Every structure is written in structure tokens, then in C-alpha cells.
Length: 377
Image (tube, rainbow, N blue to C red; front, side):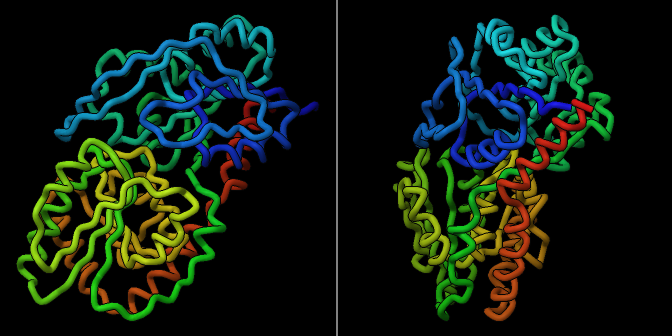
């Protein structure tokens, strides 16, 4: 059987998707990626498609506010690409991989009805927590759409649990965890010089969804009750919370530093200069900084509302986990992290790296290829 022609329908291509897509391109008959937009306006990433075959769809975008039941709001971009079916007619794919469960996937499903020999794979970058409060209309669309897929890609077990609610059989679900290029992070020296100050690092957008403010509330409480301990908290990223955080006062034994955006090549050095990654997100489909930090040898103090934390962080072995909407649980995890001995912290660094480097761009590509082969059989 000849190798299939594969069409990917994506909103845009994040940098971490390029390596697995390039590897996948060499394993199928032909690969073309159709994007709704070169890049979303809230991303600082450069558009660099390298040697991938990419076409930009005709599209209009609306911005809306997502109000989550957890009490935070987030700005999201909804893309309506209106020439998908005509582009698919021209390309004539054997397999379509449609990202997310919106207009792209609906048009892909309609095309599959026109061309029944085409196989449809839905790539659902979701978790149970990110999908809370999405509305009745989306649920109706998903009840119609998901059973039509010949296979479904998810990030991890939380995504799998979510799609199973829509009667997707287990044999059609394929796990495709996120990963960066881990080499630069895994090259960071595991041993750290003895340091009297525990150094936390946060990397990400400074937006309410990341849970930074409630986490800092708990950290401030801990610092005030332990005036003999010295803590440093460094924050890499930008967003609407930057100025409020810059104006915030902290106890004298808690040094808080805003670093702004850090260029990607400089991130390994940032991880080297830290002891623990703090990732208190209130809802994340994955959380790539967890992979990066663990590959660099940082245990993670992280929220279980991140799929990366659920998949990679083993409590007491590669980090400490908590529910971010339970302040007492967050305090307990923080207490355990700050009570860890230097010897145990060193052991956790090695265990964190060992866990993170299991997932590579080759892993992602092989899982996607497994789904393509499954629907093509």
C-alpha cells in the first residue's frame, strides 16, 4: 500500500510542533499543513516553517473572553477559515488531521462526507479542566463531531477521559504528549552549588489562568510564618498582570523579580539558576515549561490542572502536586517542597530529567503516524 497524502488543519504552527511535523513529513507520502493564521497576536514566537509545505487559509478571526467556572477570564481567538473544503478538493488528501473541535474540524467532517474514502483524525488539545464552562453549543457540536472521527489524538489521560464521554472507543484514542527539543535543556548541569536561598522560577504568560496570584498569596503567607528562611521567586514572561505584580509588596525574606520575556535560547540558563519550577495553572491543556524544567533538572511544584503535571510529575519523586483552587492543599505541597533536603532535591533533579527525556519529537511523530496507519489500514 502506498504511503498516504496527509493534510493538517491547524490554527497556527507553534515552534515546538515544527520538529515532529518535519519528522512526520518524511514518513508519509506527502504532507501539507493548512494554517488559519501565521501567528496569533498574543504570541511572541517567530514564524519559521523551515522546509514544511504550508498554506495559509482565507480566514477571519474574532477575539472573545472565556469565563471559566474557576473564576478567571482568558482572551481566546476563534478562527473561521472559509476555504478549507476548496483547498482539500485541490490537495486530495487520503487522511485529514484537523486541530481542535471548531469550524476547521466541522469542514473536514463535511469534506469526508463528500469524499467517504478520506479518513478523518481529530486532534483535540484539551483537558477536563480547560473544557469547563465552554457552553452548551460546543457540547452539541462535539456530540455530533467526535463519533465521526476515525481516530482522535489527545495530549494525555485527562484528554482521553474527556473524549470518552462522547462515546469515542478506546482503540481510536491516541496519546500525543507535547515536547520541546529537549537536548539544550538536558545539557544543563544537574549539580547545583549549595545555596542558602530556595530559588523558584515561573515561566509563562502573566495572565489570571496561570494561577500565579493565588500561588503568591500562599507563598507570602508561608514566608511570613518562616522569617528565618530566605526565598527568591523569579518570573519570566509578560502579560496584563505584569504591572500589578511589579507594584506588589513582599515580605523582606521573599525576593520577587520580574524578568520579562526571555529569548528561548536563554531559557536553559534560567532553569540552571533555579531550584524548583512553580507551575500553579488553573487550566492548561499541557504546559510545555514542565517538560523543559524537568529536562533541565528542576523538580516541579505544579498544579494537577495541567496535563503535563498529571502525566510527568510524580509526587515526592519528580516534584509535588496540588489542586490550585484549594489553598490548604497548595500550602501543604509548598511546605513539603521547602522541607526537602539538599540530598533529596538532588535525587529529584535526576529523576525529573529521566522522566522528561522519555518524550521527544520522535515520540510525537510516531504517535501521530500510528494513528494515520490505524485509519489507513
